[in-house]
Length: 245
Image 1 (cartoon, rainbow, N blue to C red):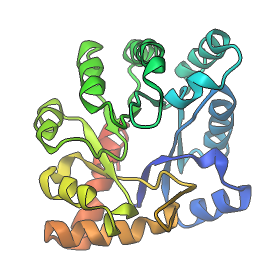
Image 2 (spheres, rainbow, N blue to C red):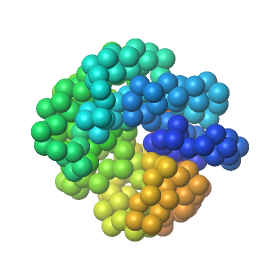
Image 3 (cartoon, rainbow, N blue to C red):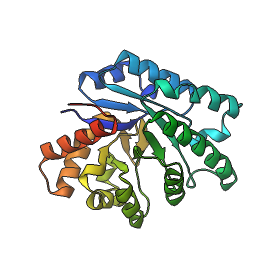
Image 4 (spheres, rainbow, N blue to C red):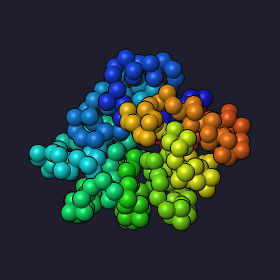
């Protein structure tokens, strides 16, 4: 049984750090932001096939930064068949101008269609656009879904639970009330742990190393033994990626 990091920007860590995570036995689902990071994550997966799953995709924040978005999209889509997952893709109304939203939705729909065509799971960003993200996931008939760091309205959890989508939580549980509410409300068979590292959040440096603490907090909130929590989250990961124990 291994500790799962279902959403980590692995290519942004130093090589020595990645090697340490691998030695420590973490399962690392590496998400990408663009073509370059997608290629790097595929290389990391090939270097550490027992520990790394590679997601390829274009983050919604990148829509303003890429000089030739169409070429970037085409090149990244070509990588999907060799990937384990599609992501980080999604929509953002919290940190992105509203004028970018039509472009975001087009980008999101394109990668969702490719994921459906190839049968890959999707690793999804949804900040401030929670309802719209669920709309597109349903429209594109997505089935294997990781809703990364879900902090949307609690009433939408009914839709997520009905759909069988998984939500991730991380060490922000220590300080983020909404994250704790999500753990309280979400069934254990739909929970995954993540780091979203390397990222600084309200004094926390998020990395896979904080996952043991996150697991302990989940166990406290759920009132269940820590080993049972670790086992179930690992089983959730195996189910999503169709792996056997």
